[in-house]
Length: 345
Image (tube, rainbow, N blue to C red; front, side):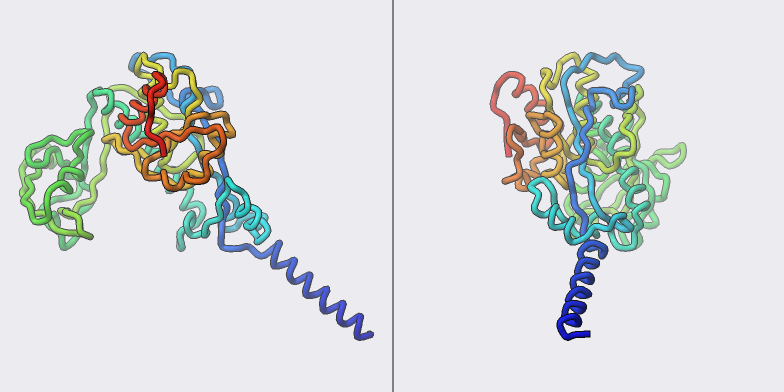
């Protein structure tokens, strides 16, 4: 074989090896891309996304769309997420490339991550109903049950699994005042009196708060549950995660009240909701804004904590409204209807 032929053969093998690496070898990243959006005021697969029974409801025209983020890649992806796919996503203004471990923590399978996301979605639906009813002043029962105590902290040996905290320093646990928030409002080292329901008896137990990572705690893990006076069912399929909570809460309020929150406008948004109405930031807001605009939204409700992430990523024709609470979101929607200024990122 001639020297030229040998050189070409070696070069060909090198090129082939490079192509194998480029196209067949996965990289430890995933691409976040705009996902589907769903109108929480409308139907999905023939059923209302938000279905209320046992209470009077009102017609709610318009759109209050929840938005999602999809991804390309991940453990066992077929075809594998390769260098070419990563570069394409990186160059797209509405996609992002992030380390795989951000979505799939080490030691967790893809099935475990999906299960966790589904549980977060189910919890967010309950929390959204609680936040909506709390905002409207509709009475329901909030139950803070101790799931476990933490060794070495004040509650260990004093409180038990299954104890229900009904009051802190005489103030009842409600949707606006959970046991956790009331305890954390006390300074470290302060005496706190808890009213506990244990079985069929009620008792008072005094503990002194300790410091844990700089926060006042007594050392309990609490599970919060609710008993509602009527049923709200949310039909959203296999979507996971907690970030649709704010839009669920707004849809419930819109259906329970005669005032039309959207005035027929196409509004989308995101944000994790707490029972007291606090709206917390979420991930993937750039992809969610792109998804919202592509679906036809002209207004996007964004958590205040995400405002810095919206800079330079706002799709043309989409107005971003900054919200930090459920009541603030309602006030902003009412201001939009009246043509008044609203807070923006």
